[in-house]
Length: 180
Image (cartoon, rainbow, N blue to C red):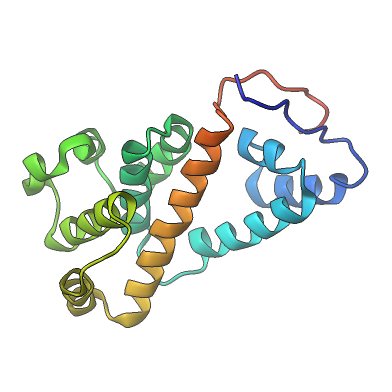
């Protein structure tokens, strides 16, 4: 159960943003219901992560691969549950997802680009500082824009998993049903 109660979706300050979230995402997920304790934070989060998920040139499969690895590394089951179906839809295989816990032992399941992206996710999540050689290897495979987008995606989803885990948010948490 989450460390804080979920926000009231019918609160007048939250209502316009609830409508936008439902329009863009189909429903108000647990994450957004917690964020709605602070409508300005929720609004910024929604805009930023919508751009990361829907408006970058970075391939969706690569995006979802690093998101799933970050969820594993940070022990964030909510993030993994939300993104596993998206990862499959973006072309990742169930075998690839199952291998993420020890992806280096199953490296044959991943392309050289995927391996480089997973290594970057590991480095950024565990060590923070990234050696130039890692960035240069990715730059040769992707180009500068997509390297920046990959780094931004990894940074963004580390933020997501840390928020989720700090507040102990889970998909099966009971919450008030005051809106869609």
